[in-house]
Length: 273
Image (cartoon, rainbow, N blue to C red):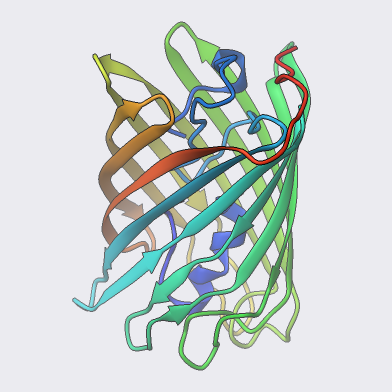
């Protein structure tokens, strides 16, 4: 979840994107204690945490804008398996925007529901609706001041050792569009796989199409790339860079981790069908 922008209009993209360096569900391990990172890419995969288990993702991203100002984002994502194909995601970001004060951002809650595994064309297929509430401060640029409803459509595939995750998302926001556009969308194509020993790699191209209204912004296309490191089956580290291709996307560096905490309550075995 290292893909958090630090301006009021772009912070709103957090909800849409947050909910992979991980294999897709087709490659997912049967061990429920093995991590399934959604970090560090904007895209997420169709896999879900095993029912009754908790996984935490945390990291930091330092953004460098064209005017030489800096922004910082530190997302924390809690993932809980509710059922073999159902995952609850709770995002609690800390945001240090350029020109604003560091503080907690807007809280997002989403549910990922894997509808199919290994289906023709769509592969592992999931949908993830989510809601963002204005717990951050619009005045301090740590939030948008709006309640948002988002839907993310997820298609994951495995080509040998390479995982491919494709996402398309849409967000509808409250408010009058003065501080942040009422409609926003995102598209992503993420790739990842093993490199050597415990080391792996991720690469992604993603975009936020142009928005309209008083707070409208030009379209963004950017590339993310970096290594991952499997410390233990339940702990994965990541780091890398984000480079803009077009639009007001800042250059950025990021680092973080995914930690499978363990079982919270007894549950059925993971459903890999």
